[in-house]
Length: 373
Ligand SMILES: *Cc1c(COP(=O)(O)O)cnc(C)c1O
Image (cartoon, rainbow, N blue to C red; front, top):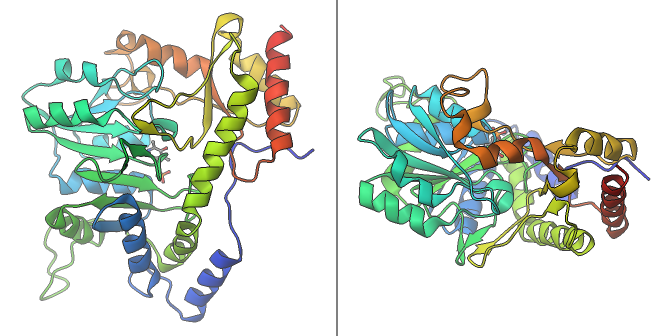
């Protein structure tokens, strides 16, 4: 049996043909060729949004979104503590202050009930993360945002196609931010997109993405901009991937259902959930060890590795980061659940090419390894 990777891209002849066409036409930058516009329109419309702004990564999408909203030094942004640190970096790039918010025990998303206590006169926005493909409980988040006049940004990097009460993520807050890194649900190698229904914000993001070039004289810049364009080559891949998105979401859900059949009932594992409001796209099949397995993650991951099964640890939450400004110390004790998950959680192979046999092999090996101690 092959080494089973945690993730792998799903690429075919459609991607090759598009990339070749872009190269043969000499249309490779973010300005040349038809693919960037086509990918923006197609992906935004998939999300239920009227505007898509393609960029160079998920991280630059987050930075662009916050910058376009006018977030600046000293502003406070409420952010789920358990996430890829790119979410926090985007806030830190603007010298704004991220306030880590503790998580719900089952979805591992930020707990909306904890938001209001952290609001101060300097709070400007709530940055939610739909972690591992499960949407955040958005209704209470939107209600608190409306009550206090806050913007809502969605980090959808792990949640392409996920739905909250039938509405696709990326269209629920003010701006949605996606990543198309190689291990995300669809990929352009590196890449990202901002989605919004706000025409003025879309225009501002388009301008800031491209050095804020002037309109009459291109080189009379409107403000300090970024060079965050997606290339036509990346978008060529994206257009082909977009056609496969529904299939890939179905695959992720089928993989999760198969793991669930094998693992449900184990007293040593907390499995991913799907709340009644949620359509979970299970970006990665993430588990938390509990019971007699709770403190044995290193040994369990190593044993799986010896059997050719790749796994990956949970993110380390912001409040435990030791080298980031505002990270460790101040709020270390504030997020005990997130702290526990950080050292007890990991994810199993979740790539779209997994076979039924491989899923069964991974699950039975995991249960055997846990029982062996
Ligand atoms: C991957 C990811 C990002 C960053 O995206 P890049 O394309 O790697 O810059 C941001 N937030 C979350 C939650 C992610 O999973």
